[in-house]
Picture (cartoon, rainbow, N blue to C red):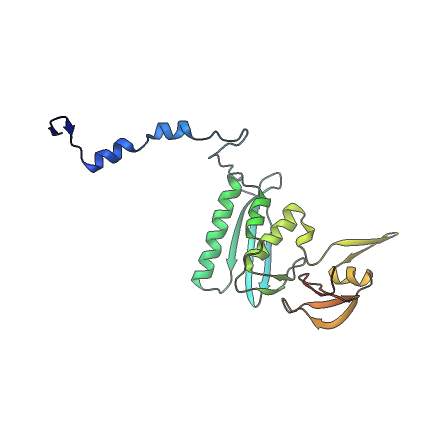
Length: 220
């Protein structure tokens, strides 16, 4: 390395190497991981596992998703198949399923995963067929998120069909949102929701959609 008088000349690359902190120092200076959180540890699923397969149709697009569970019933993976969809949308769905499965197996809570996917909007969206709890969604991603939340977290607030029951002796009757609204005194009209096309009910001066919950008029 050349020295001119008392000045030592070094090239730019060596300056960068000298100024860059070592890996050991970076690890030393990093904040400690929260107690009880094992980072980088994956909990594998057994080779044979239980799960559920759901078929649904969103605005004419058929979608299947299959879950894989741990022996104790916890959600551990998900597969998504869009029947007849183009390669772009199908590839996106497969990528989403893969990263979601990895997150779950590395300890991400189902609730955190679901909350990240709720409210995602893109086509196809709208009316949902073949699902017994969800009648409307903003996207296929949101439909699957709502299904997982209902199935694995008991999130009845995300269901359009509410499994409220009226018990009279030995009789148990399942009610959906429209039936609940009628029982509470709301009046069914021929008006449809501007958001999802579902039927509106009128209670006083408040219009409420029995499918997606959109309200208008004099709602308090």
